[in-house]
Image (cartoon, rainbow, N blue to C red):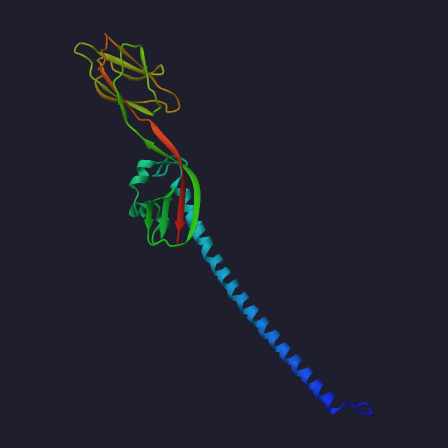
Length: 238
């Protein structure tokens, strides 16, 4: 510095270099800030795009899963209980025809690890899961010992089919289920007769005839169900 307080040439040079360094640092900081903002905007744009797409897929997947398990639906015996036979017969055309909400969309329906039906190419999308019961009906035929006063079925059912063929001269006139008359003909019952019974209780059948009914006069077919828990998985890739 000179005697009158002015900076020397060396001081001028140092000040200039410091100013240039500060400008470079400011430029680098602005560049970094711009880069960070750019990345943030890209991420935000992707998040907004996903948020705009996923709710539509989720609403569709949720709506379809609700309809698949609705009481009185084509696939259910009652609410949240799927009929296994109806599920086995389901295909893409029937799914789209029965549930128009899936028409033209990529949809996959699974039970546990097994694909039940698929429409289109599902590679991602949104998935809705729910616990359901799957009920499969069996047909069991037995020839009861009619020497006893009544016959109790070993498993519950909602109906019983009787194949009635008593010997000549013997008339089976009345069939009772748990004390309630479910079939009656004074002239004599014959052939196949299906009677409704309660699936909520064990069924005991009794027969009224004008004589002794030998074993083989009646064959019984009842329809017990086997119910298992399963995971219904509905995926929509819209």
